[in-house]
Image (tube, rainbow, N blue to C red; front, top):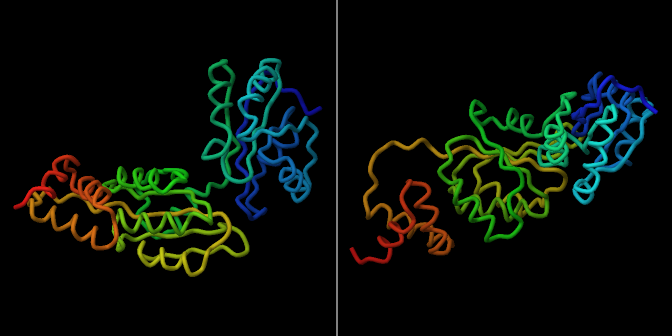
Length: 284
């Protein structure tokens, strides 16, 4: 059993994204002294420990999306009994689109201390490498899997002026980029960041339309973080009714449905969707 702490606590451990050299001294110390190590993938944890030459003396349990609801109460009870619990995911910081939030919330609700052994983050790494403004950004995690739900989410984000960061699965990146190009505009700058810190790290910086074509041709694999430039700041100038109609017509010509085109134009110009709908369906 690992070394007992004076009072139970939760430690969120930032794991390397791919390059083992990014592992911190605190990561090593935390894994070797924790009473319990909750891991998203216990096999990956075993490989990480071997690569770091770290002996995990505490109890190792699996803690992933499929069992976190069931395992959380047991971990909170262990912390109440004085155990130090380390939570580690496959890469990056726990709870950032990974298991962890549920346990953090439960520990805090139980009055238990929560701290971190910070480590790499795909979000900030991709943002820094993208070449896009990083002074203001928002993280959107994974987009919805279904095309309709994904387009609806993107329509809601079309006028967001901050740089946007998404996670995406390789088999969905082509569809996501096509929807982004249609909703945000093919000329919006973006960067696909693939396999960060690993041997075959690749950063592709192009407008969304070009990236959509690239993804179709290359069919990229591996873990992907997508960074997209924010919408241009609103000039405050009033857009005429005819300009709104023309914008909708242009999107329809590019292949977007009228419904999606109306929603995109409304979001881009900060106008009510019903107003744009009425303009499009009213003869000038």
